[in-house]
Length: 126
Image (cartoon, rainbow, N blue to C red; front, side, top):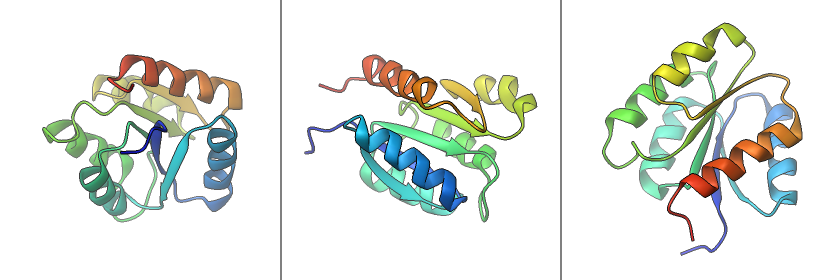
């Protein structure tokens, strides 16, 4: 088992995905990248990451649908989820659906790292 805190990043915009990867890897986190909701659900179920970073507007299965499925599945329900969205109006509904944090795009690197740290401290990661 990896000793790094592993983040599954679901983002369909390659530039944003690259920025997320740089910020998190420079901070010492492991990052697995997917670009649609179907991949997210497959990888999350197979690898059980320590945290999920979730874009809401993704192809195939939206982030909203993926969040609902993740929270209904006993294997993934306890994985902390940080939602990123260009629509700040989605904040309340995503937090109600079980997201731990919500950030509007563009996000600030330090705010993202603070949320990841909070999820790390909240989880059973050792």
